[in-house]
Length: 136
Image 1 (spheres, rainbow, N blue to C red):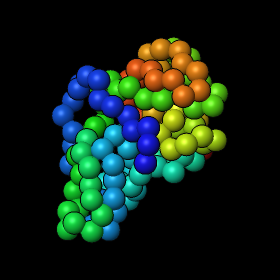
Image 2: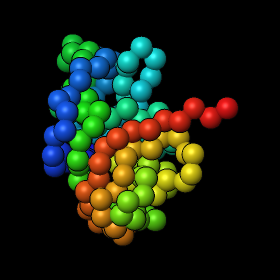
Image 3: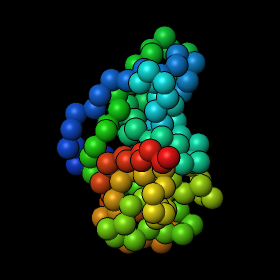
Image 4: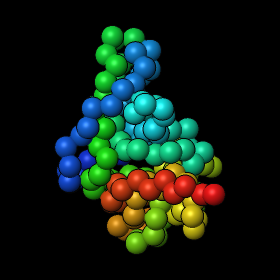
């Protein structure tokens, strides 16, 4: 996977979460939350975002835990629609994995807040602060 998020400033230490032994996860990958605090890489369709992988997980290495940043300042890549400073961001569902775009109101899968305005493919800083509203 390309375009992994890069830690810029650590606000909290990573938390160990469960992952499947047969799964490979790259450091800097955006992770979605599944049942019982288990994580997988997101597939960019407004998943339940929990955080960013703090380390690499090699597939079938016998390890079933991975460090996950739940908050922090990261450098990421803007998707096709770009991002705007101060706006909530989500995974860009029309672009490559780990690119971000501005989120709509009440949208699921909020990753955090853009700290800069960036066009398609540009790097920008963002605050990782996942929000997954429950919509009735």
